[in-house]
Amino acid sequence: MGLKLLLPRLANAVAGLVFAGVVAGPALAQKGLDEPFQGPFRQALQGKVVAIVPVAMNFDLAQGWVAGIKKELEPWGVKVEVRDPNWSTTAGAQAVTTLLSEKPAAIIVHNPDVQTYAKLLQRAENSGTYVIQINMGSAYRTTGFVGANWVEIGERGAQAVVDACKGKSNKIAIVQGALSAAASAYTLKGVENVLAKHPEIKVVSSQAADWDATKAKAITQTVLQQNPDLCGIVGFWDGMDIGTAAAVREAGLTGKVFVATSGGGEQKGACDQVKAGAFDLDLSYDVPTQASNMASMIKWLLASDLKAGQAKSSVYSTLIPITKANAAIDGTCWSLDKLTSSH
Image (cartoon, rainbow, N blue to C red):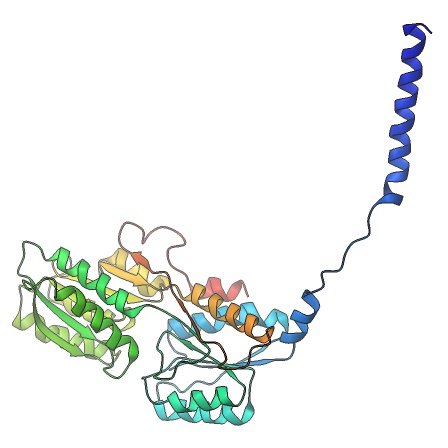
């Protein structure tokens, strides 16, 4: 057979095969497979109750945690309840006690100190309720802890102040939180670790402001009156250190006294303050990520066969140092409006 006669026949054959494939394709397609694990996961979360006991609900940390946790858990049918002690340790202990009888699937607790809730949290886990502690832990280690590494925060804040004081007076002040709070005690240890390597640094004041901006301002005003050549301040929480920065500003020393602090990274309390010069360094432990970590931990626990207290683990937050170099960059800080609007 000649080549001219063969080519048309080959072309017709190929066209026929292609057509047959097109026609037969859908009939031969595989059926979809049902993912076998999503059903049990959804069932494990549906209808469960997660209770949150912050120290109070009127500040950025608690508001951000609650918004983030609701965003992650409510779409799965989890009911999120908040019990607000409003800064009362007694009311907080009563809230946890009440939850012992209600037996939610999990309790998230922001401890005011290391002792008050410790035995109550142990009782909760003994009764089958998972307990996740956020940022400020108790003396009793529960199933989960999500929070900042306060020793690291103390070390990084103190080192920044030491570096800023080079060639200056070497006089610094420390504005602590509440003496009984884990966050304050551990942060102080971090500060001490750095100062032990710098004997040239003189601490002229180390006082507790009890997380209160008014007290922080009064303490700082007195310190600056007595030490107008102060070169740095290590503060323990930006919500409190708004008062610290106000005293520095009113003394006309903004930019001359280096202020280091830490917080949840909320826009108005962190980035805006750094941009305005109130803080020179704000170490953020990033509240939305903490909320996501807690929610993920709860999802995993509810879908697992682990009993409360059977496993104990911690997730420490990756710190974001906020300075003038990144304070104006979108995404460095978060805002409650955006967090709640995306829920």
